[in-house]
Image (tube, rainbow, N blue to C red; front, side):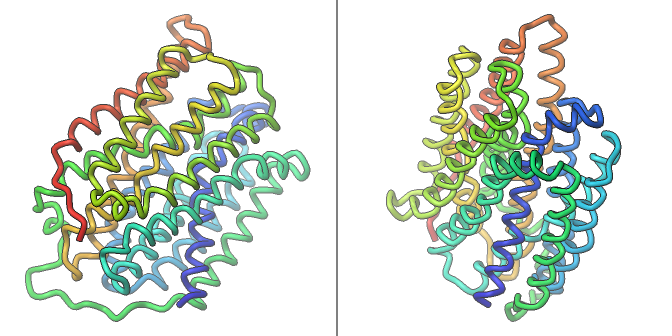
Length: 393
């Protein structure tokens, strides 16, 4: 099982990579096949939306068939196939279709690991293990920054993405070979539906925070960092790679750090709330002054990445409210809200930015409006989450 968890970790590295690599590819895709940032925002949003919608069938499949077959088949067929299609794309339509397939392929990987953690380990360490897995997976975030830009310059974007398709197939094969399914828990009659999870009022505020908490970090790192630094500061591909690498490293640190903080401070709710309020402050600063200088802007978006990855602790907070036979459905429903929000607001962000530009605003002012949009969304989530019930076990 140790090797199996390593294989799931590799799969999640790829999942993190695919959700972030458009930021680096945006300039070259625009120059080569004419894809605009707004069209890439839609493609990125579709990845997150389909990823989120897949959590319902994935949850059923994890409880019914186990993580091994569920993950290996989807990652291999849809993830590998989608990456291959991306490498052949000639316009925004195929880019979007490819991102949909990749989103389906990546959808079970993290939840398969969470399912194993929830079934084989105590609830007290779930947040730490979840944070560690997400932190390891965030190496994909780093790979989608400077290494991706260097690979594209050296080999071309089509050849680089084709290589990723092969790597995805190898990861799926490793999961099929080494992941072992935990013993199945058979629910009692009448139990085991998604409605059973939704009926718990204690989860509702957590759902709201999950829906918006990852939106700014994922949106900026996954897409908007590239156009922002190119249009406002004149950054080239190499500099964008360095800046997104810095933000990616901040997100790795944040993912690993958030996990054990509940045991350090004796609370999950207040660690999440304070962290996201600080992240809101960074976004407000970028809203107020969208062109504060290259490295000041870099520091602020890195802080957004560091503070905006409370996802593992929110998952642990929600996990504490449902029983063993609902683990598969429960964690995937939580993930649906966490990833679905990114999809919805990523697509909205493209429209916000386009509308701001149509008002004859400068590029800096348009991005200021975009950061303000992210700040308001996150602040609203914090307000609702402030009324949640804390729980550690």
